Length: 179
Image 1 (cartoon, one colour):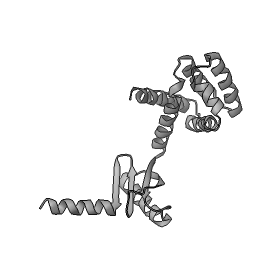
Image 2: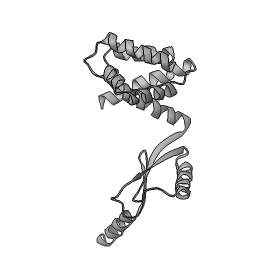
Image 3: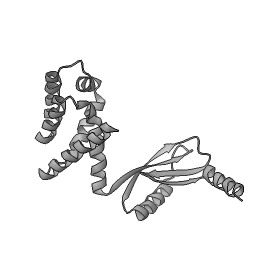
């Protein structure tokens, strides 16, 4: 929990500094994350303690140059390496993306159902309903959940819409038991 709070503070700082300098920090961090995720060697160098701080900074600077990262991003990550806080970089990046999405009016969520794919017309109706209800554009990913007999469960932050058969049967059962 403490790391999450620290990561959020760093993320806000990165974004505010990026705003001041007109730099799209979220885009740069997403680009960096993609490169780290594709290379186990880079991930090992940055996050394992077997490498010295100088080795980590040297490799990172090469990557930053190839990705054409801004001086702000480069210096910020060098600072994390120097302070031995590079381990929370993935959390910081996650927070940066979440905060940036919130600023842009986007919100992420999931649709769960027992079929392999969700009907696109139904998904469009759900998105439209959520946009009207919460006032922000949701980006929904579909997840197959074999524990749902029929219907769908939609979760967006702390809002959950449960239109599954299982939920309806449970509500029916509770209404009978309570009488």
